[in-house]
View 1 (cartoon, rainbow, N blue to C red):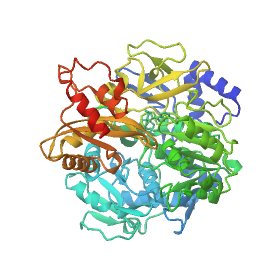
View 2 (cartoon, rainbow, N blue to C red):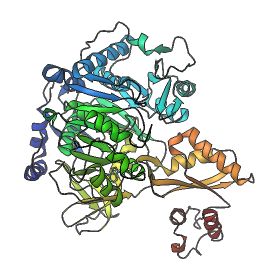
View 3 (cartoon, rainbow, N blue to C red):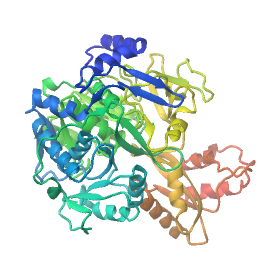
Length: 630
Ligand code: WTA
């Protein structure tokens, strides 16, 4: 499965395009199927309806646990690094992981949870979160992990949309020196969620919590006496594995659905090839993402474990207790493959080279980035200082909806170019289209990044609303999956992803829709209307700037209410960086808000506004500029 030269990549790529059925069929056969598949791919991008290995029966956790148990049961699967380095580290072999997952799986079953039920996980990055993810998959329950920084309202929205029967949580989450409550947030959310029968509570910090008898169960009680063996539920390849909510340009976040078979095949294949991970060489992989995001699903919970990897799981933040935390942990665990986000690189780069050079990073072989475009300066610092100019940097482009990495170099095999994700993985067929759907073949011209053939881990639906899936990804360019990103291709075929062409803002690698933030702001008492735009931010990539029209309350109060309203509707992660209280928003004569003008102002480029005289209310423009500069 692991390609070992650029020539092998080129051959695999050619085969994957010429004969995708054979290409993916051969790869998929290397997994354990309870019942082998005879069909490889059936697809139609109009409905859309995509199926991979549809008559095969499997359980993804058998390919993680049972398979490795037989061959490598004593290999370390997880090296858990706690938030506070003074706390005890934990590690789990594949055999131990199997036992822990089965105990949680049996505990869930004992509560009457089974195949097809939805279970929401709202937890810190403790090993129990990973056990719970895999336990759901083991029994065929559909997990939906909600990042432990979302608010009670955002959590309730997701629980309701998924119709979850259980929520697994903890008392609190540790984030550096801070402790943030989780159980009380769940309690708040559940006032609006009738579907939930059971809440499990893991005592992460030992904080006291309110208790609802008959509903709440202590983690230890839930798994007490449970067997360390649990048969893996037989799942059709297309049965849903999980739902993960993500933001788009309109409406509430949508539940992206991935399925057992294709997701298994693609996360494994992309993991071993992009990172050139070799379990037999004693490689140690570390993906710093939280399991609350897709990266923590595909390249922490699933891909590496499917490949039998040894990996670090980190509870904390890069700057606690000091700005050398990543590098200290890399040295301690002998990390060979390190995967993080440009925002973290930029934040750490600001502290200079010395914190990196304090540590022996000589085991590092491959560095990866994900989540947003990486600027040249950060790329070079990562390559030069962290990688000692010895490690290839893989800039991996992908999305919650793609399930796995789409564009990237493969370890040291492929050419690298700063700022360019690079070439497509085998099986991935990118095209750049004009807004009118014409294919762009010239180099250096920006177009809409689309894919014209399905890959095994493509989104199957948006939970409970298939039409929304069609509208969002398959309608703009018929016959294609559209990413929502703009990109350019150079003469060597290397692709540079520039950023979203829709109303999605990417803040520190986290996606938010401008509409969802505006809706939150508009709920505030003293707000009349608002418009939200992104602007370039030195550390976060993009920041959130909100233009808010208030009632006659004083400006500071309006701004404060607007900000709190976002925190309460979505969470601290979406708190706007700047709130400008303004007398009006620039509108066309038909009443449409001119976001182009707002974006220019927020970017500090008000000298480039051009002619605004055709606006309905051109007089607000200088007032907006004054508010920005004020
Ligand atoms: C952006 C994260 C440039 C892009 C895995 C995409 C990137 C969105 C890159 C998906 C990259 C992700 N270069 N942009 N290497 N990786 N993006 O769903 O705009 O959280 O559409 O998935 O992040 O974000 P998501």
